[in-house]
Each structure stands twice: as structure tokens, then as C-alpha cells.
Length: 134
Image 1 (spheres, rainbow, N blue to C red):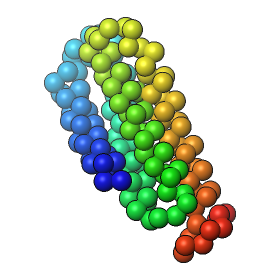
Image 2 (image 1 turned 90 degrees about the vertical axis):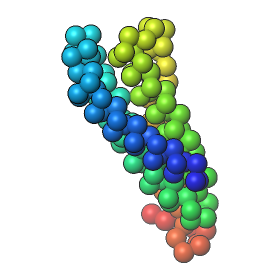
Image 3 (image 1 turned 180 degrees about the horizontal axis):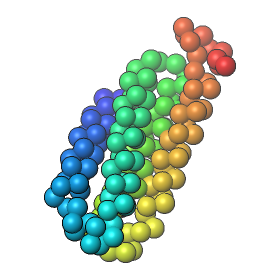
């Protein structure tokens, strides 16, 4: 899980940097292109999912049967951040339009991560108990 924690930290740092760069260095360009909102959405989703990834990564240090679902959530969020936020940033900067279909694939990966998290929570056992908690 160390890799997910590192990825979460890097995603958080990059998200803050992109937010600042978009607000200060690129605002006039993004506004002129009409892509400021897409940039802000990319940054927001990246930051939210960096925190979620961090939380899930820390949780998986507990070895119980829900950990595999939490690892799936981490993998899904990592892929989702790269595809969703990455494609929106790329498109905001004038990247080729063929990259557009990648955005909803990334969004599905982000949603999948939340579903994996829910399954992991439902199968989580407390105090080493194998019974799911409610």
C-alpha cells in the first residue's frame, strides 16, 4: 500500500500546483479558451480522490478480508485520477479532441473506486472477526 500512499501524496501536491497554476498563471488563457471550468473540475476531482486514496491506503494496513476491496478502490481511483483529471487538463490546454472519450472512462474508474470502497466497508470485520459488520 506504500505505493498508493506515495501516489496519493503526489496527486495531492500536483492537484494543489495545478490549481494555483490555473488560477494565476493560466487563468486568462483558460478563460479565453472557455476551459477554466474544466480545469477547475479536474483539480477538484484530483484533490478529492487524493484524500480518498490516502484514507483507503491507510486503512488497508489492517489485514482483514475487506482489504482487497480497499486495494481495488485505490487502484481504481489512481487510474481514474490519471484518466479523468489528466484528460481534462490536457483538453483544457488544447490537447487533441480524440482524448475526450478518455474522460468518461476515468469517471467510471472513480465511481468504481467508491463502489469497491462500499463493498470493502460491508465486508470489513472488526477485531479480527470474520463476520461482516452492519
